[in-house]
Image (cartoon, rainbow, N blue to C red; front, side, top):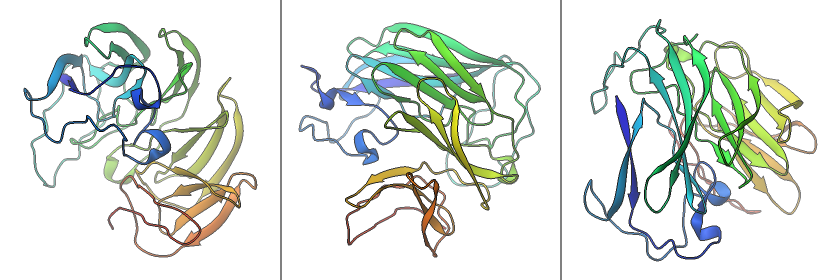
Length: 286
């Protein structure tokens, strides 16, 4: 099975922040763009510049740095079941028994041509996933010099912009709720990579060195499986890592501990936050 990567028609002249979407939800994790030329609608043909097939499955979002588009995918040696659309139950599937390859791809933003592909891991998965999830659900992040591709229940892989693997940090597989798999994306901030690995065994927040992948600190927490991506909030008082759980938690990065908890709904989806001294808003569901 192949996924399709579409490049919608936008103005890509020049080089600057408008040509960059370096992480999940883009610059600042806000999910917005200042580009006035973005189309208001598109289809498989309208406002499409090019289409490139990507082998395998991946629910991760593409990221963009200047003239390069980065995507991830996992390819099964025996093919995979195609999920039906809509909301339905019964999507649980057992752990696969065939060989898989975890792959990072780089495409030219103007032409859609493949620049390089790199298999960063291969083997038989040690965990299950929901039919409507994939083993490449986490969006990579880049600083323009390195690409950090995280595959939950597998590991974090650092590549240069030419696709060479610089370092690897593997993680043991853990059980997730109903065997649905993982999806939280990594966050890069001031030389550190932050991961939230919520599961049904031992959830934790992890800070790693951007240069080597070495562990800087880890905080275990009493939370079950969650699929949302953390948000870095830099405010006048401190820098905090916001995680959506029940309760919602804020980690003061300088203190390496939970600074604030808000009791309320249990949130599973990715969050977008508008934050200042007086207002906090979170999108999610119970």
